[in-house]
Image 1 (cartoon, one colour):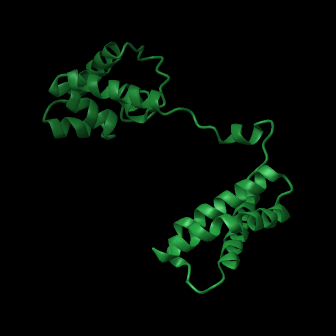
Image 2 (cartoon, one colour):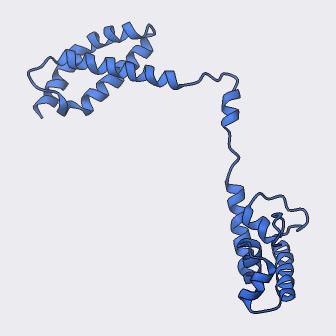
Image 3 (cartoon, rainbow, N blue to C red):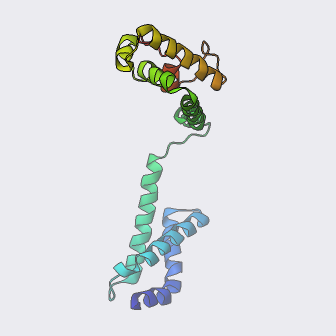
Length: 185
């Protein structure tokens, strides 16, 4: 508490010296004032680290210098991109559309009969062959093929899609609709 009192009492007297020191780093007075403000904030938040009996001005100047050096290090990592070309390379397509499509797919999948959903997940989602799916389901291969075909058609209907022209990149949806290019479908 005594160090906070010391800083609050001594700080107004130190501000002109800090501003003069900051002007060494920045010719622009506004930027120099910003540097002083940042240094004072850091000093205040770290007042518990100040050792009474040491030189307060030197401590404040050291903080100001370190703030300036930190800013310079950050600037080195910044890339000037006036025309936005670099930022355009970093752009990423929004993910909410595919998430909404996937949610719609899951909702539609739950509306299928249990037999159709099971066959579709085994063949389209898990990559089993029709023969393997038939063995798992305990039915004929033709039955699995029929279930998968009907499930895909019903999914496309529920999602208002043309199963022959699906353009969604969602892997599960594509596999379920038979557009993954796998040999199982």
